[in-house]
Image (tube, rainbow, N blue to C red; front, side, top):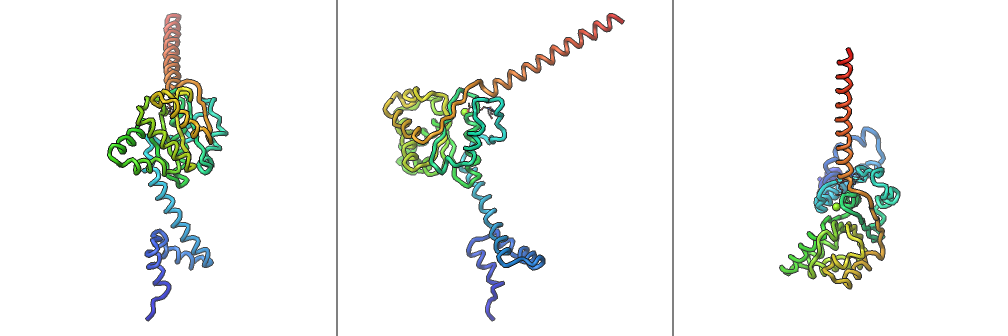
Length: 275
Ligand code: ADP
Ligand code: MG
């Protein structure tokens, strides 16, 4: 007796590694019969379940690979507290079009103004859109590359920094790079530029101070900036640290509460004296 197509279907799904479609085959077939689905409705239903599960798996892996130090979203960003950030520009960046154009983003500003927060939030959107993201700091990245260079594995490590759709380099300029680190940093910028791949970079240093960051090598700093700024959106955030502002507000409310208590108790005392 020959094998029926009904019998072939599960084996074929397994062979094609369509595991979610396989898991849902029986229940989908029953639903199709009960609700008189068309053949293409049935096929579309099964394939969509498979694709959705694959996307979920991809996002899970992307998030593991990204190594975000914490997860913050654009919805958590208080634009009222940071008026120098243009919400419309951030909303445009959230479409992830900059990735496909190979544009870079640079967030500049003093500590605590939300540079890392915004970089991570855009990184999360990128990972959720199904793309590889890698988050690192300038120091961590160059230390890893220097170590790889010493171990004759530079090619592989460079590949890790240049292959993801988006590379986030946080805290450029917090610590000065040595000559080797500066040259490795330059190689990453240059290779990503050649491949049209996006970078998000955050820094507390103005571009005019980059020579200092690049071990005093003004020529290398300007060559790196030249590539970085060729297709780039620079977001300059000014103002004071969000945490300090929050702390000051909390201190002010505690003080107000204290003053209220003192006033209330003084009034109560007065009232007591009068009666
Ligand atoms: P930076 O990288 O500029 O030094 P961060 O992005 O690390 O600053 O911000 C410091 C902390 O303050 C983080 O916890 C961040 O989520 C929070 N923060 C900063 N700005 C805002 C904002 N406008 N709205 C909400 N949280 C903010
Ligand atoms: Mg930061």
